[in-house]
Amino acid sequence: MVEPKSHESELKRLETLQEKSRSGGGLKFIEKRREAGKLTARERLDLLFDPGSFMEMNELALSPSTEFGMEEKRVPGDGVIIGCGKVDGRRVCAYAQDATVLGGSVGIIHGQKICRIMEEAMKVKVPLVGLNDSGGGRLNEGFPASRGVAGMFFRNTAASGIIPQISAMMGTCAGVAVYSPAITDFIIMVEGTSHMVITGPAVIKAVTGEEVSMEKLGGAKVHSEITGTAHFVVGNEQECIRLIKRLLGFLPSHYEEGPPVLPAADDPDRPDDTLESIVPADFRKAYDMREVILRVVDHQDFLEVLPKFAKNIIIGFARMDGHPVGIVANQPRVWAGSLDVDASDKAGRFIRFCDSFNIPLINFVDVPGYFPGIKQEHAGIIRHGAKMLYAYAEATVPKITLALRKEYGGAVMAMCCVGMGVDQMFAWPIAQLVVLDTATAVNLIYRKEIKEAQNAEEFRQQRIAEYDYKFSNPFYAAEHMLVDKVIKPRETRPHLIKALRMLKEKVRPRSARRHGNIPL
Image (cartoon, rainbow, N blue to C red; front, top):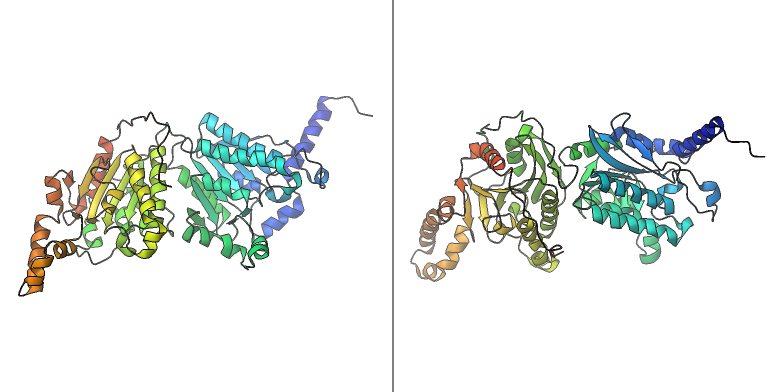
């Protein structure tokens, strides 16, 4: 006999269901995760959101499946927690997959819940954070679960360029559970405990006969250094949450908003006499471009993105005069800073992200050209290199370029010069803005004369000196309005900030076309 409803009975029923939802897969599975050094899904959300600000949604949603023993395995919430709250005082939506419930697998309701929070984030125009910990699609529920999975991909794509999307990989994620993060803007992996694979080691061995560990197949090192899938790697989950907060601090909530500005506590007119000693005037000597960036930006605070992938180019976020900026810089310590296939992909996508979210771009240029060789040609350097050209040409945010030393060949255009829509073009006095380096140009122009000269090397050196003085300098480029201003190295920061202030109200034209066709 069913007892009549009362406030007391229904409140008790609610509390029971809520307790089941909050317990996830149960104490046994929770303790097992803690032994592995992992936090629970709720503990992760508690670290992310300001105390008391998180509002959970659909906590009682339940899988409709009863086949394959699902009647006994179903848990309210269905293995994922969704909701909204505040992160450092700003509204954010998030989901956290709970691997204690059926391995965090994506079932019918699980997928629909994630789609629900994606829609909410787009509706209220706030960033979306995904704390991913899923073995993939839920086999117990069959093909109907694919609707939610496909819906996640569709909504990730719809949200792209509208709101920032950050994915943290908090465990071993496989199959469909890695493609949603792959569409988002940034991926963070935890060293030693997070993995991303399409198929696991067992399936690979069965199909191809290859034996490989999960770590070597899809660990943090693989995706941060080889595939370029993971933008950041951290040592533990607490550090992961701190990084998410730091990253959010550079980003606006949505595409119609400017990025968050901090009080300009670092003197905008601060000169720096160390820059000349950091950057050798001898072009044959390498240096670390990071040192230049750190000396120029506010408080030497630079958040580098993909630091171990395509190390010949540097990308990341910093602040100038309190305002967030995106940095793109050649790295002379690696291949002399030349561009290759991976560097073009890495920079091209970052440029497009910054343009999507109103973040000005500052380019530090010291580039000898595209990296030559059969391997690069066959890898598609023409197609991949064109991505940077397209990204810069399409970008309408303020674009400022500084030539420090080498600006050679087609790579000049790839780093955004006059003709590519740059707003302000600066150069140091030692910079060379030329089609080819002086020696190579002289060898080609005076090939016949050098061959016929009595003292070929002396003649060649004289021509190099003449060519260098006439053409291979920023003053010649400035004469032809290819450089807006030749600046002293020590005054780099003040000039960049003045340019940013001037461009603060830059009008961004709206295109009538649907979108262009970037050479993917």
